[in-house]
Length: 350
Image 1 (cartoon, rainbow, N blue to C red):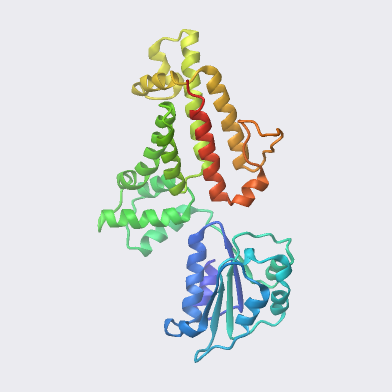
Image 2 (image 1 turned 180 degrees about the vertical axis):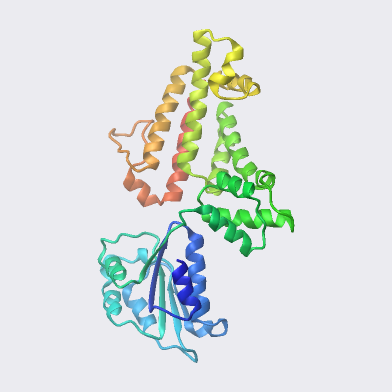
């Protein structure tokens, strides 16, 4: 990506750029750099075309072959090349052999399959760019902060990465938020806890507390908040599994006669949390907790795309198939799976 941006800054253009990334912020920045370098703002009214919706190869080529008006070059931007039907790609395949030198064709591919002829040819000619996150996020985060004039203490860098993970868009937004909060002083790890980590972790606790209280509306609200924060759906399932396991351990500790002072270390929680877990366990019988564990396992497998529905009609413990997730789209499928999981668990309450 750095080499691509350096070429653009030096005025070196390819006639075609097809961009794919799991991180929208990377696409936005490369797209912005291409647009700024290729078409000045004053010329965009006549020399910037945007292809919305479902594109066709014929339409893209027709726009790309149009000559610029009172400018050196023009730009054609296709919002989602992946939406184009395979049988519509032939004109575009022909265009790859002799692209118009006065047009910069830029397309985003939300889905990428290099086995498809079009993408294979784009990759062969060097027009396909897969933008990946840096392997080391700390240097990227420090550079992001420097660009915004934000001073991050080393502990703040570590804490921000712990709280947000590898989501570059959320990391960039977090830098802006804590920079505005801290002003000219260096940002500390406490600042991160106050503004970033607290929001995420508070929502997690709200979800577990709502499930423990069998409060479905509040639980679904917490799920919606976690999805809006782009929290990992698999991570939410892992967290819920831990909570259900703790509730089941309450029954096991009671049945084995372990003294109450020994419950906190056995459950892996501070002593003041033990009473809350005991109260929550009363809402769920051991069989209900076992059923909740099965639902969690199925949700985990569904989110990872390796579950099949074998029963007809599906059993209450069944979840989505891989093709169903693909049809819905990852974000929507994750949200629905979590909503159904939480609804099913709360429904097991006594």
